Length: 394
DNA sequence: TACACATTACGATTCGAACA
DNA sequence: TGTTCGAATCGTAATGTGTA
Image 1: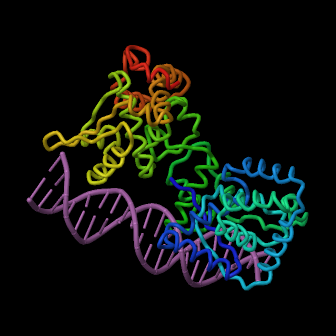
Image 2 (image 1 turned 45 degrees about the horizontal axis):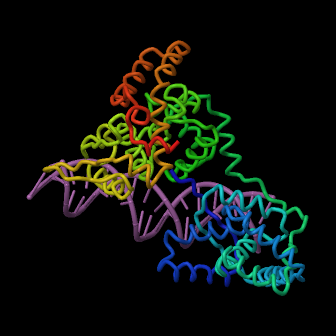
Image 3 (image 1 turned 120 degrees about the horizontal axis):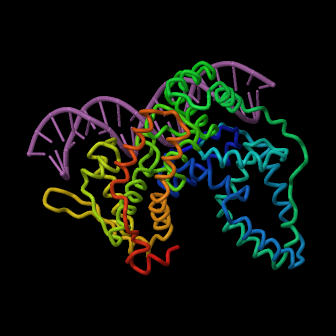
């Protein structure tokens, strides 16, 4: 499930228009790309794209060259140029984490967010970090010292409190340790004063994330602390496999199919297959439509190690863990961890039975587990006779 | 004016009933 | 059992509005 929020700041008009034109020229359209490109520009600007350390090394190299800086002037010019220009409202959906990191990183700068965003997208249009690194390396030859300069100021921008966050916290404070979805929606409506489905959905996602709760395995309308689900199912059970299918997005459903089929294949020498019907009923709890399951099978079959075969009128999804391990060891690791969890889950359930007076509910959970775990192996593929190359993936 | 939040509009995606 | 196609839902851009 995505966690995207809107950037909604006043950005210098000319810069924003140029950025939109840039996105359109790159992708042929704005829809779906504006937010992603804005997100990348913000990440690169505040060094959260994972390449900050590379740039730092380049900076050291430039410094070592002992050249005179010109970056400070460039930064000043950019800032004053944008400060004086006409602004327009710029909006784009970005990951909430990216927006938070961006605001945190630039909160001490004297410019408003919109102006800083303009700097970020201008930098990004100019080739992003890659282009910047290239220019920096070029400058090693003539003016490296400038790269030490920053235009940061110690002024407090006086950021206002985020009202939405305050409301989310208020909602969280009114909820018990566990609560029904109906209670959650009612609290959101009463506390946040929202009624539209999109707004309620957005608050629900934020509250669920903040409280770190998950649907109860035996009752998807009941939200309980994650630790409770951990106790019931085991921490090694992937989120895609422990969450009710109705709360998974398309990508997570594909992951679930891959993980479940892979797990079943381990005690079968790394090979197994399942019919499209069984994918729907056994792996996806009868939630998606058949037409959608067909699409999911097609998508999974694009992953190395997974193929779809037509046998008569029936399509079967097959997995070959040797191939999965060869081309996607990370996925193989997750499959193995999920498989290994099977050996400890009985103890977890026993512990839950002793500590919780849950009666029929516990029986439901055990029954659900039995259904889920019908292929629980006696001999592990990875330890008894499995291919050697799979052994190596640990 | 700058910002935040809610709502609306609309295209894309998914669902599910009907049918082959 | 798979495919088709209209309906429903979702995700994102755009707009409206309130607040400091």
